[in-house]
Amino acid sequence: MNEKKLEFFRKLLNEKLDELGKEAERTVAGMTDSKENFPDPTDRAAMESDRNFLLRIRDRERKLISKIREALDRIDDGTFGICESCGEDISEKRLKARPVTTLCIDCKKKQEANERARGL
Picture 1 (cartoon, helix red, strand yellow):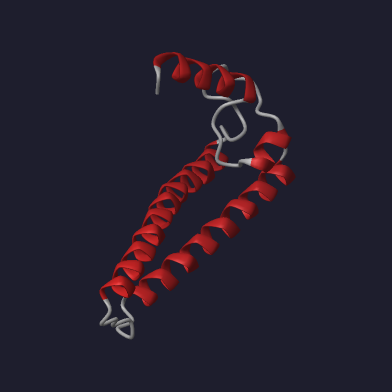
Picture 2 (cartoon, helix red, strand yellow; picture 1 turned 45 degrees about the vertical axis):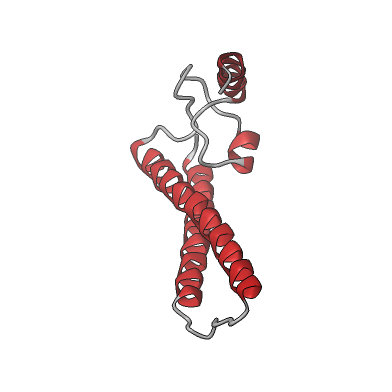
């Protein structure tokens, strides 16, 4: 992959990393805000349910942050865009859709088929 394309993906990944960081900061700020004091048990339960849902989303985003950092490391070490399984190039279209991917579409399909066969 040429340097111009690598810089495009580096910029894309860094922008997503910044966006996720800002979302995490907003979540922490919102959770430390003590304005949410509901005397009604139903309101408190709804608030806790919403908070738990938000925390699950943030946990998924935390995992995505880790994958983004790994993708940036692959850009630095020259392995970005190369399938971990077969060693072939990952299509640019796939990388644009999911820049943290480590598998080409064929290897990903095989992986998913194996997971289905094992019942995962």
